[in-house]
Length: 253
Image (cartoon, rainbow, N blue to C red):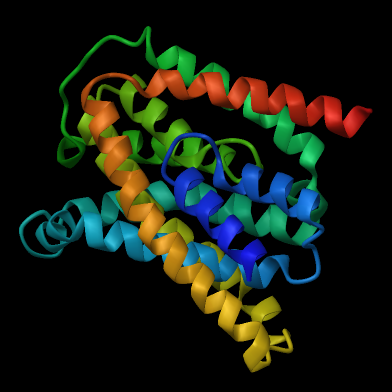
């Protein structure tokens, strides 16, 4: 139970703050020796953080379903790169997703991306005004984040900013784009979940983990939104870089 709670806190924080939840789950999973049911744990924890997005952005989602319907095809187009890449990695290179050493190296890349944010010019385009091409290009940034250690939120926010979105709009589009991405990843993992021998004593920690990830996720997402308004997201680089260096040294010792 305590291991699930710890992983849920890590997931809730790292899924939204630009420090890579996948990288941190790989690293902490290795430290805790949790490997047998990693797919099941990932599904449950991601379901919790998906619920966080739905709660925080429910008004934007409602607008998207009613008045801003042009955003829906933008999200579909933006999901295509990660969808194709995810299938390839899942079927051909799954071992890359479970390597703490790769996670450590990719955390350094995330740190560099976040430092870049500080030097990008301030623009004010809205995510509703994105062209299909730009939505696809932001989706390419999201596809890179399938590697553990590359922050999905960090890379897509940087991509949005590079393509002219304002701070808050880049954050909003990033997390709207996360909805189909997380759902898609869950579908890919459902086969592993169906094959898991889940008894009641195993189910209880998973339920607790989902709830903790949900609650922590709401806090972390609101924190990220507040920091993005102040232009402070680059400061998270100073977590990613030492964490990456430490992980690399640990794996190469």
